[in-house]
Length: 516
Image (tube, rainbow, N blue to C red; front, side, top):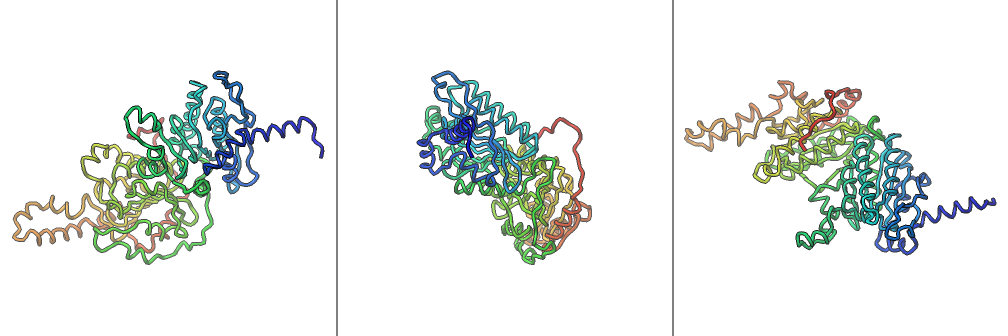
């Protein structure tokens, strides 16, 4: 087939755009163990599905000799494609062009795909690898970032937004990922920080590397910014694809329902003995979750941050559920500042995208101490309370052991519009544990006792029989049923099926005022 001159010119321009960074910079990117923007999109999207927008866009800056350098695409590749047949919109920052730095034209390309994603109701995935704002553009670059931030906010809770950090993300650029629903970081070459090591050295005299300041390890364990950490770019892309399988296309749709060959009435006898006889002895809530969920699968989110509270996605009879669970093997499952913030954000994410929430509760209370109080445990604990109370999706709770004090209230109790609240026979529901309660209630009797130790033991047993069991709460209807642990899976599946047509709403208002 012969091609006319204009068609040949078009094909030449397209090839020029695809390699606009130049061979030298592309090789340099590969030399760092990094893929180019287009190579990353090829890995992310179904083969042959990518449709590009704005391939021929160039920047409009005429200062500092920039008019002499106007590579096509201007440093970001944008468009749409499919992942496992589902429509997604994407942008990938191209470090081979001006270090991936953002200009006004570059920002407009990103805003275009963000608008389109919201308009048609499809997830947005952004791949970050950028040196930040393009200094030569001055306030135009800052305006471009602000335009993106605004769209992140307006479309928050409308379509899923996922940020994949595969290179530098510094300065104001970090705020766009911070607003998105999930941040996935590669453990090499990726870092996020507001002010870099050089600025910190000048201002505070601290010597710190980029990795120490904002690497994946830091954000996975200390700041909580990273929801997932990947061992490589391939792993980051794979985790992104897995995450998408649990999420709906937008806030008006239900999450995709997966195939389930795991019997819904499967009995897990191990659950009958998993709670230790000694109430102070820990066990691993991961095992509880996996014994109940389809095929033993649990896609954990923020696994290395605030380990005393587990969050993540799983399925029950093919239906996506968000899991929130106290972890007795870490700090006895107590709620502290970080765990409260972690849980609150996840609950709100599930509520925004129509994902039912299953809560496994074994919580002795909130963490005591001046450190927690000074850092806002009242405010942060209230965030978790607010999130559960505000949520209108189906909410199912299983109390496995301890449910004490205010933590009982906060963890999706019946009083916060919990739909199905179940308890195992080992559940202890009370204002506080027996040890503390006896010292408060029976202090006079203990003082008068000939043998305080024996009296304390006797009174503790009496307290346990009266309060530290699920039946007192069940008598009042605060617990819908006390169940055999081995049957938890079928009870939750039946509850989910019953709640499939749930309709609930909050009073009309602009928005609530969560205690931030």
